Length: 136
Image 1: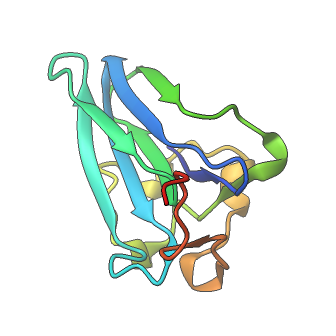
Image 2: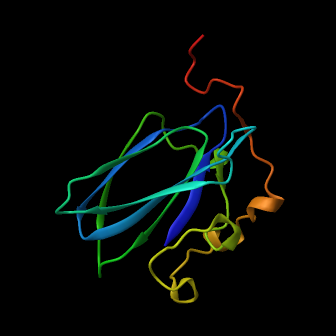
């Protein structure tokens, strides 16, 4: 399992993801202050057979769980990764209501992913009133 990650402004990212080998549960969580769907998530299963692609907009945190023995993911991002802008919410936050399809107590989490804040303790850098795509 990985996540739930995002890039802080001014280095925000949208992502288009797909699974080219294996099976993955991919999740996006709305973290835009003032959004009627703040803290809500969308989950979709991506597989090498279903060819589904999943778009994660700016202002959403992204995470995934590998449901097969191995998986290969393909990402397309609209901005370069900037480590100094990296942020996250805990993938283990039960208040998000995400069914990861695998027991989280058996999840193999990176050290970085164990240090993310719970949503209730999180101060989002995103606001629904701010256009993250530069439209007027």
